[in-house]
Image (cartoon, rainbow, N blue to C red; front, side, top):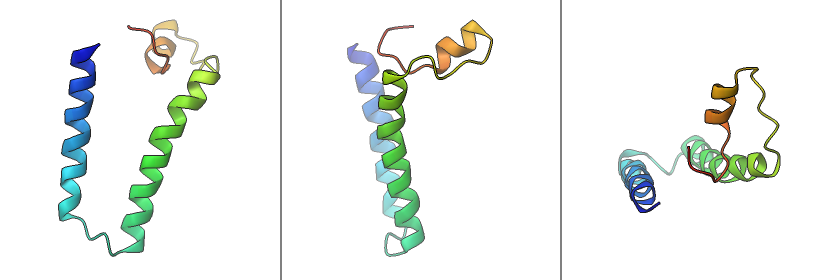
Length: 72
């Protein structure tokens, strides 16, 4: 569990550190940043509550696309 948390933390910190090059005075940039944060936080919760929403017809693909909390 710990290596996954560390790697996700590193990815998030690199993404946030790239914001230093973005003009955050622009409403368009703020909108894109805000929508990406909100979607990233809400989609996982929605898929955890409704695990059968993703149905591609291919079990391996459905399993990889599902964001449940179990290990692959």
